[in-house]
Amino acid sequence: MPHNSKPDFTRPLLEISAQERQRILARLSFLYGETEAKSWMPELERILKVYYAYKHQEAIAAEREFDRSNRFTERDLILITYGDLLRSNSRSPLVTLERFIRDILRYDRLFSTIHLLPFFPYSSDRGFSITDFTAVNLSLGSWEDIEEIGEQYQLMFDGVFNHVSSQGQAFLEMLGGNRAYKDWAIVYHCADELTPEQRRQIVRPRTSDVLTRYQSIDGPIWVWTTFSADQIDLNYKNPKVLMGTIETLLLYVRHGADIIRLDAATYLWKEPGTTCVNLPQTHELIKLFRDVLNVVAPGVALITETNVPHQDNISYFGDGSDEAQMIYNFALPPLVLYTFYKEDTTVLSEWAKDLEYPSATTTFFNILDTHDGIGLMGVKDILPQAEIDFIIQKAREHGAFVSYRTGADGKREPYEINTTWFSALNLDNSREDMAFQVKRFVASRSIALALRGVPGIYFHGLIGTRNDVETVRKTKFKRDINRQVLQEEDLIIALKDPHSKLSLLASELGKLLEVRVKQSAFHPNGKQQIFRLSPDVFIVWRTSPNGDEHILTLTNVTHKICQIEIPLSELGVKECHWYDLVGRRGWMAQGQNLEVILQPYDVVWLIPFTEIERSIESEEG
Image (cartoon, rainbow, N blue to C red; front, side):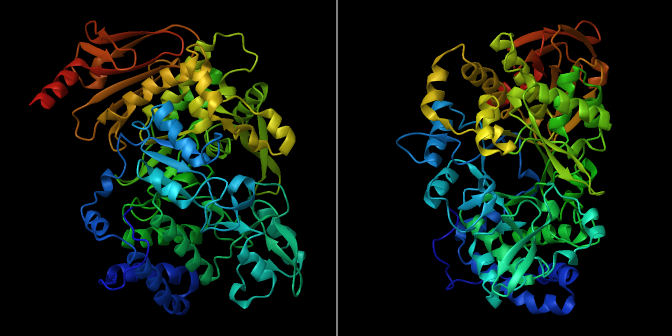
C-alpha cells in the first residue's frame, strides 16, 4: 500500500503552490462567493495536508515521474462487479471473487482493474444508499480484503456523493436538531415551497415525488430525494458538506482506490427553477475534485457516471485537462444492441466515425452492460424515438423490463432497459445451438473491445448470465434481473463441461481478451478510423500511438456469411500477407484489395504479417 496506517506529521507537510491555491479558491468562489470561499480555504488545505501525511515517501517520489498521457493503455481492462455476486461456503465473498478470477477463470493476467460496486453498509438500492461511507459491509469482508485485492489489481471505488441513506448517522443527527448537521440536506418546511412549475422543470431518473416527508425534532420537513425516499440528497450549497465529501474521497484513495467513479454526478447541484441536471455548479464540483487529486494524488483518475444524451455526457471531459479523465460511453450499449437487432452497422458506424476525446489524458469507458441495465439517454439525440421504441420492443421480447424517469416536461419516459446482455441478444427458449448463441454474444462484445477507449465488462456479462426474473418477482425491483448472486461451486461445475455456455464463453471471449490487452494498436491514444464498406460488417482500423502497429477489426453482425473487399489504398499500408489474431490464420490480398469471407458473427482482427515479424526481431535484438 502507498499509504501508512497513521499520518506522519514529523516530515515536511504538503506545500500547495500559489497557482494550485488560486485555482481551488476560484472554484470555491464560483460555488459560494469570494468571502465564504476564503473562510473555507484553510479547512480544505488542512484536509489535504492530513491526507498527504499518510503517504509513503516512495509513492510521492513515483508521482513525480507519472505520465498522465499514459494513465490508461491497451493493457487496461476493467471488471465491474458487486463484492458479493459470487459466494462460497468457506470464504468471504470478496476473497471468493478474487480467487475465482485468478485461479478458476485464470483472468488475473487480463483484467488490470476491478470496479468494486459499493461495498459499504447500506439500507437499500443494492449498496447505493450508504449508511456509513467509512466502513466495509461485514457480510462482504474487510478493508484488509479490499487492500489485498488491490495488491493484484488496480481498484475502482464508487464515490456515491449525491446522496446518503436516511438511516445514516448524518441524516439522523440533522433530524434530531444537531446544529453541526444543519442544512446537510435540502429541506423545505412545506411541500408547496417547491412550486408545480419548478417540479415540472426537474429532470430525474425516477417517477416518484422529488420531496419526501420526514419528522424532525422541530416538526415535519420535506427533503429532496432524487432517487428514492431512502436516499437523501446532500446539500452542496453548504460548504461543510463539500469538505466532508473531499475527506471521504481521500479516505478511498488511502484504501487503494486508483479510480473514483462519481455516481449520479449529473445531479450533484440542485437549483429550483432549472432542470437540476448538468448545472455549471455540478461541473465546478467535479473540477474541484480533480484539482484536489492533482495536488495530492495525481495518479488517481475520475470517471463520471452521467447517463444523459451523448453531447451532455462528453461535456464532463471539460477542456480535456480539468474535469473527468474518463466518462462512460453510454451511447454504445443501445447502439450495439440496435445494430445486432437490425443486423445493420450503418447507424453505429456513422456515430463511431466522429468519436473523439479532447486530449491524451482523457478517454471513454466502453461498456455494454452494467449493474443497472442498458441506459437509453445516451442515444436520445442519436436515434429517432421510433428506433428507440424498436430497441425497447425487441428487448421486451427477450424478457427485459423497462425503467422510467421524469422528463423535463414532467412526463414519464423510458430511461433504461433492465436485462442481462446475454438475454438481450439470445432468447431464453432459442433453438439455436449454444455455440452459435455464444458466438453472437462474443461478436457484440468485440465492438466495445475494438473502439478507442478502455473496455469494461460487468461480471454477469463476463459469464453470460441469463435474466433473473424470479428475483425480480420477489423483490419487485427491476434492476435485480441483472444482479443474481451465484455459487462458486455451480460455476466450477459448468466450466468442467466443454459444451456448457460458461465453458464456451471462457474459451471464446477469453481468447479475444487475451489478444486485446497485448496489442499496442488498441492503446486509447492510438488512432481510429471507421470504414463503411458494408452494412453487415463493423470495421475499425486501429493504429498504435507511435504508428508501429496496425490492426483491422471486422465484426459480422449478421447471421449470414459475408464477403467483403477492403481497398488497401485506404488503409495506407502496402501489405499482401495478413494474419488473423483471433482466428489464428493467414489472409492474402489479391492485387489492391484484401478479400475476407466472414462466417455468421465472425470476429476477425487482422495485423500485417511484416509487423509480427518486426516485433519478433525487436525482441530478439
